[in-house]
Amino acid sequence: MMSNYLTATELSERIKFNPKYISQVLRDTVFIEGQHYVRPFGGRKILYLWDAIEAEVLKQEESSSSEEMIPMARGGVCHG
Picture 1 (cartoon, rainbow, N blue to C red):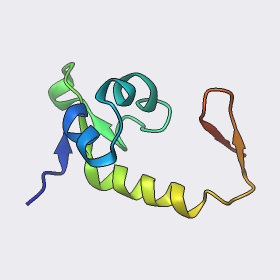
Picture 2: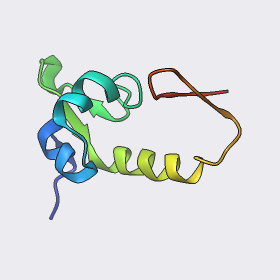
Picture 3: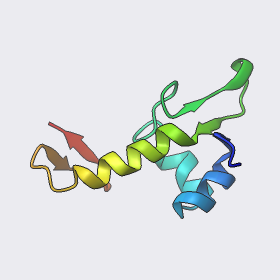
C-alpha cells in the first residue's frame, strides 16, 4: 500500500522532479498549503498529500489545451 503522506524526496520518485525543485519552485506556486501539503503539528516538516497532487497532475494534463491558461516567464501558468 502506498502512503498518502510523502516527503519531497518520496514525491520526487513518483512525479520525476528533483526534491529541491519541488520544495523551492512547485511548493506555493502549484502546490497549495492545506490542499496539496501540510505541516503536521505546526512544525517545519512538510508532508505532501499524494491524492491531491495526483489529482492536480491529472487536471493539468486535461486542461493543458485550455485557452484560459496564460504562460508565465518562469514556466508557470496563470489561470485566467
